[in-house]
View 1 (cartoon, one colour):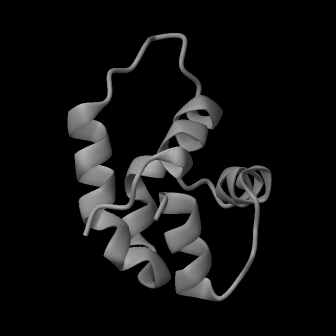
View 2 (tube, helix red, strand yellow):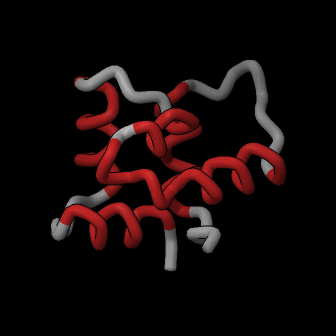
Length: 76
């Protein structure tokens, strides 16, 4: 299961990546803080695993990071 699929499961939606990235931008939610939102508390381990196992470039935007995070496997 990807992080995208898990986020949709947690809120009972079928949003695509673009919709989630737009939601995050509009609500000023960085990918590494998503687990601070009540409905996404279960995402904390996924955020940590993603941050520990992915390299970032200075050219990566928050949109790029969200895109990669949503494609990554959900960590249980």
